[in-house]
Image (tube, rainbow, N blue to C red):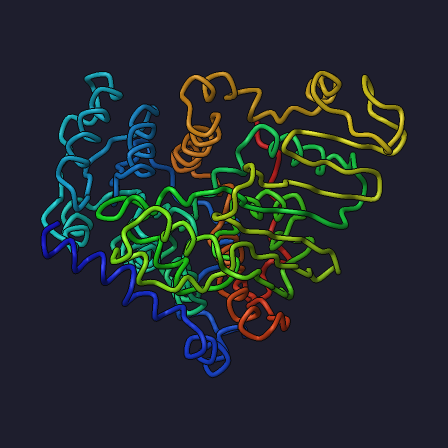
Length: 470
């Protein structure tokens, strides 16, 4: 590994971690009152239901085309109305590979002139200044999400960022302020909101099938210890340091995003209020390192302080509760829970199961038993989300986590071309990401409740709920 790459890894995975380490970092939240409402900047407008001017062709640029970013670039290139103008990555081979596939996906008529930026850790800034893209997709280590998003908006681009949107409350406020000042979208790309089950449940909640919503359960339980084998290059080369240096609910948005939109959080009906968070002991990463790496390996020099599993409870303004769990270490099956409970029934996932007061047509005749599998056929026929009806077959063919990735990417381009509000606004990205930040403080304070900032400055009360788009 060359010295520039080594320094970059060190900078983004160790030095950058200082921004999110207790106790100094947790004290800075209190000292700076970052959980309180601040005044909007001069010229700012509220972005909750913002519609940008229509773009006939969306000029797209990509920062980071590794395992995740390459998928974004290649599928965006396949969507009509896009022009990939630039790709930036520290690795020349990754940039070249993505460019070739983008050109192929353009059918020979689009993406003919893709400029590659691979000359070091700051080449992305040169790309923004020179190419002036309409939309920038950021798929880099977590520490870089906020500064890249802010720079992209200031350069005149809408920006679409991998999860989480940012690591600190200060970064989140800076993102909100920049989006409001520049009138540029900043969307955290929560793909799970576009899954078939999640879209079905959103539609059922909007139609009142389970009555008044009371409680949700969200998680990201995904055993990923094998990523530690990516020592020089890949997700494990930087993400492993987060497990070592942080203790909280670090990656909450995949489970939380859908549940938050079922409840209309930050969208007119309700909002995030408090969070309490608790972590188990941290054992699994140390054991995995000792078993799979030499005793003098860098992973065996780390003391993984993060708990193997974190359980957090979010309380909303209306008094609803959401259990949020995160575990990327324990040997257990994958789940996001995806449970939403109301006064007339419960919808849950993994596998898809539904219990309704009075029973489910074609399934059990009472709520004491879930309907699942073939028993849900009539439910899907009646409540399948119109967006999935329109795009589901194509999305399944295109792939990407069962098609959810493609639907998300398609909707991003569709909204930009039509001048419509995005399905996820900048404030939602901040609220969902703030769970990670605030959970660390709560864990450090033995589960003490932490208050969410109101990133909307009160405007959530008049923000339209996410509609059921066709």
